[in-house]
Image (tube, rainbow, N blue to C red; front, side, top):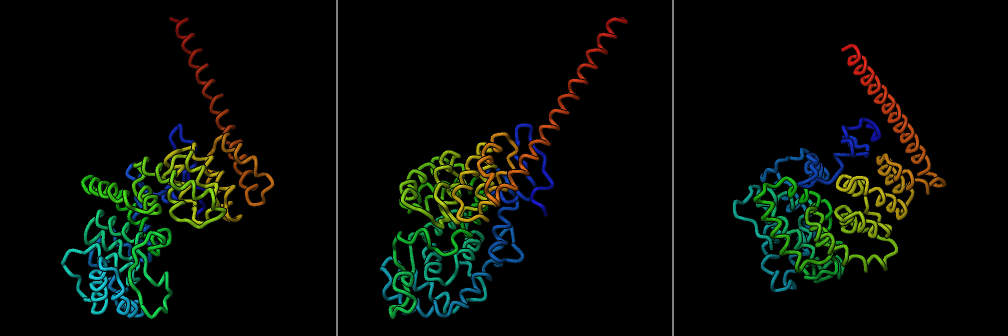
Length: 385
């Protein structure tokens, strides 16, 4: 469906041309509702049906598939377990045992955060499949704790290679926190959706857990915690402050956690973050900024256009700016007349503004005429009385 069609109702002060499709792309929060976000996050990890609300048995079958199929990873894990740190040897052995003889039936025993983190880190189960299972079997707090722990762990194969005679074992380090666990972005989207829909009791418990985890978590995890809890503006502010020295010496990147931090930062802070070309910055990040900050987010979108890594991304961002039907947005567009992908969108914005101003002028004339007629009618009535 055409993204520029089928406008939804707008409030008098909202001059952003939202469509139902665009609304569905906004990251959900407890303040800005996006009912399809959680379901879509589950669908995006390749599950049909999405199975929401979560049913534990359904998601066990998903992780069971990986327990059974990760044969090479399992053999590497068996060779490497003797090299695992003392703190992780028992959990590693339990994870290996689980995959050596996976049960068709889901165990009723409570999950162990250590064992689940070991399964993900030893690459015996991808985190995008594990996280919905954690949510279904335990709760949001368990999933949150385990996911954050995974950002401080890495499989030895990332350091020594997959052909190392030592096999695979867990290494405690934050050096790989921005890249591990693999597929973490999908997991964080599912987690944010779950937090947005959690009961007040579960939310408070998870928020308290997150506050504790932040104290020792590496920067990527702290940025993603701010993403998962968008109401905690101070968390985003602190992450931005720690991030600025890093991006100051970065010419170009593909950073998921930086992109998601943009979505929860203030417009002023987001402006600083998008100056670094980031291939991971999506239109959904920018749409979420508009949903939370309204017209004030337009400057962030234009800054992202300047920092875009290629013309296709620049066009995608420009189509977000097109939604902001204000003179200020028009001024932001004015510097793009020579850009071949943005110029046509700029012209469309001018046409929209002209049509909007024309309609407003007609409405004002009509309103004035109605008022004048009412005054005249009142005067005639008074005179005849």
